[in-house]
Length: 86
Image (tube, rainbow, N blue to C red; front, top):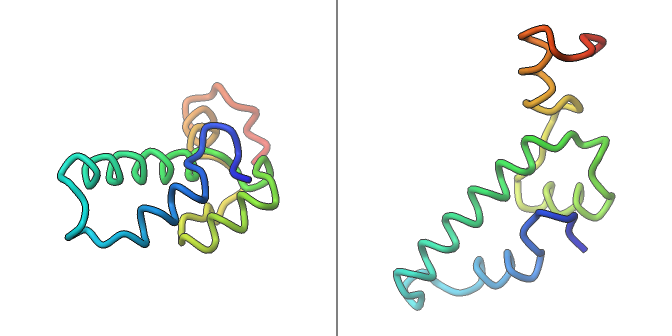
């Protein structure tokens, strides 16, 4: 089961298994938008906050975040709004 706010594993699999040549332009655009949004969500969410199944799903889809600190937290730390303990 994917984490809240993330693309479901069945949606990802369905998009990957159907050849682009069989998709409508709308389907292709939707896949691109959903994939980009899910990749961004993966990057923004630290691994320490992901469920085990989400971590596994991200690893399988090459969508894993290799740092435990989220980009949002790094940005906060950079401007002095974070806890700066990372």
